[in-house]
Length: 456
Image 1 (cartoon, rainbow, N blue to C red):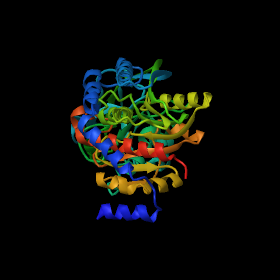
Image 2 (cartoon, one colour):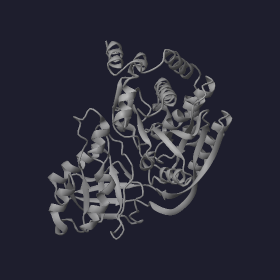
Image 3 (cartoon, helix red, strand yellow):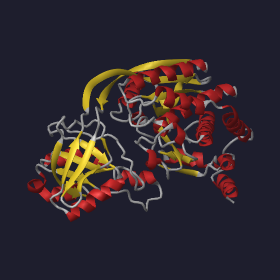
Image 4 (cartoon, rainbow, N blue to C red):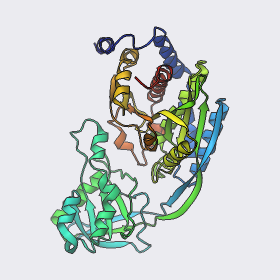
């Protein structure tokens, strides 16, 4: 029934939306990827041999060289490194978060320092706690009730949101800006409920930000189950104290690279279609879903074109962006260089939502979305049905100011925020077929957009 509906939709949107041979080419793309793709084993090497890849680290440097060699080995027309300076944040030693209460005694909580955070110092910080759900509640408390205390931001995901990225968007500002808002009122540290879509014992890291002129205070994330415990204990004992100890610090700027592979277009070599993911990852896991898998999918698009003898009209670039997690320096530098060289980027596609079962794409341009919906019958046999308004991704975002059209790869979202920014984001939690299906789906869309263009 869904296949019939998609076919009817294609007819209603105008015919012909595609040529008779396109279904055959797309089938060959899926067949090649599902039978011959090395993407899963490439991801195994990246995660198990290279490991985590925090920007500025030795792991990030090894990942740059690995992906450069990988694309060069596939014989792409051009493979090169684009220099970029990135911040190097160091997590430091053991992290501690401990409740001290007359009701419960001393209780250790599952914790991780937030990226970019300053440390507490070796002696740690102990203070009373104030709990808030949002910045309005924090401001209502005022400086008198916040100064000298630890602010506990405890706003959970909205579990009624079917798309978990919308739930994430509704909660993440407390992690990103909580330290700024708390410091304005004299707080000495912040504890943030992990950005997770379920209640468990796993803390999620992620970046916090500081503001010039506002004191930098430490920030940590507590697991969702321990966030509930902390909240309940605080209600029972308003005099509750929390002890935090972290030794993280910012070690300055380090040289690094975006890694770029290109197939040069046969008809419009000076017009570029970018397919990208970010090569860096947090240091608590292996960055398998976030975003090693997205990088391998981007490379796989170009490999599949070569394997099938598909000569693109436009130049296709697979870009491994550096420093998405705690600075976005790679995406900004790529856009800066593109502008300086007057390169015409007609389209950018990003895979940075995990590599679970593919559902479709988010498209940032209304006319392009209508065009892609006309190809729905071509995707229906592969159970790809969702073509919806939306954006592209953080790394390709800086290209938007250059009139580049934006598309985001859209996989199933339900499991992503059980792994995102945690020690569980490892190779073992990637399914081979899901990774390959996603790569084939992106390749099929690139084939159509390259053939028919991105304009009306």
